[in-house]
Length: 283
Image 1 (tube, one colour):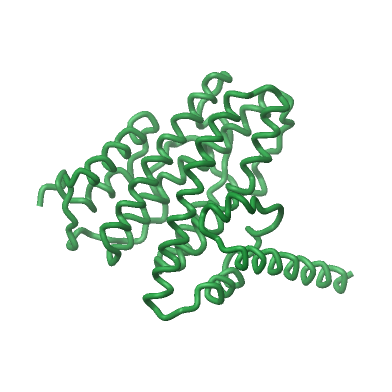
Image 2 (cartoon, rainbow, N blue to C red; image 1 turned 135 degrees about the horizontal axis):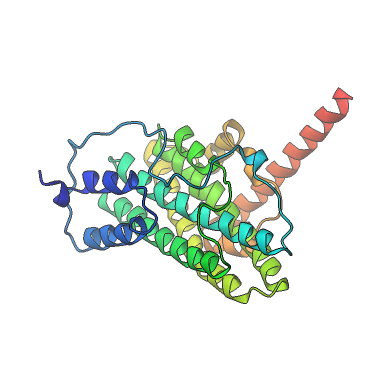
């Protein structure tokens, strides 16, 4: 089959692409072509574990704890914050492409969602890269970490686990953080980047909503109770991602129920209390 007409080889090509100038517009073009019916699903296309997706040689990747902390009030610290968000969005392109490429048992509507999300993440990266360039820097100028792709590897065996822990935990934490980051940017006078984050927040609510929909749909198909399943997965994987303040309005808009949010808050408080008691008993 012609690779240009076959969905999975086309996604794979972009998933492995490394050029930050050409990858985002190519992802947007791929999404548009799929929506227009210009790509066919080919079940024989190779599928394999992907230790690393396509990314440029820079930024240098270091453990999350080793990413330098910089003072926001300095020009370098300001740019580093924007760079950190741009890095998240570049990784989110690969995460969305991988979701569409890897889990092939899902219907066309699933591909619709994740290629649309990949295209939106590509747009976010372009917007943030432009802001970074306006500050006199570019993507790759600061070290970054690989936590997002590490979660992709932890969840590449099961689409239900991926939907639970990437959009519903990691992306949802972005909803929580966005207003806080916007407030910091406004306080240092960067209204332009704060306005860009309005676009990101709107789109990311939709991304989390898609994750909520597919998680619930998959639980129904497997005869699983969604809340109990989600709570169990939080315990098995990355419950630490639930620390801090919740953006309850955005999470409700993204499809979390009020009951589920109360459960998550209780889970967080219970876990933090348990950790505090463990630390105290070790003294």
